[in-house]
Length: 343
Image (cartoon, rainbow, N blue to C red; front, side):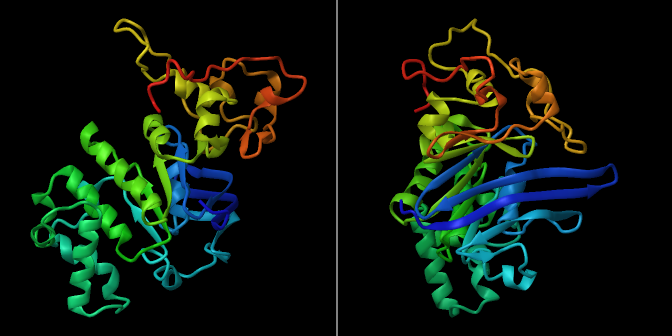
């Protein structure tokens, strides 16, 4: 992994206008993605992780969506101000996207090979024979055997895991620098999930790609990522390396996520520790910490004022008042090496 920054996001704010009012889906998100690293964004449904990922390629419909503030730079170029025509030169060619559900993302009326080749047709990059050769090559790269047969099949003739490999092939065919994978193992059994994760790991190790992994599964994060962003209520509440997030947890929400996982140390009759309450209403987000209403350690200031981002170490920070010098000394639960079954 190099120190070269491919993506730089600064104070990103993105909302949706609805009949009920403005939904503030992303609220002041900042992070970067370096060349050759895998960055995981984790959080429960509705936290803003998928919207953030789709902002990178301007895939959220505008309207009803709109950028309120902030900057997204890819290789130093501003993304937000680019036109739809300019974005077509980035989507697929510079940044690839693996969508969440391969069952619905693939066109059921088109053969697999033609769907892979689609990215080249408008751009007129290759001849017909070259496009087929490229498609066959990428099918082999993602571990699809008998690529000639698969090339001529329709999506309904493939298994769920095979469809997901095709989605990854479509994201890779133009050799982008960054691949965004949105919940790539959803609805797959554990054996196929392991194969897909191994494939994503090879994108980094063998092809030098940067990967942004969107997931709610901390097990997937632990197995694959270099750095982790924990999102809640449209904000990043903690960031750090995998070890820092799992073993040096500094935000109550992160601690709650870890506590809700069934580890190998738990017995059959042991109860999990859920995070009680519901996520904040993003029509009218709280003025203080977004997690305050569900946090057992919440103080009066947590409700009244948003905390600053406290730096724990180089690269590890948290958005939590518990880091203030006058806050009570609270020991948050983190995974220990003895009890963790994630790594």
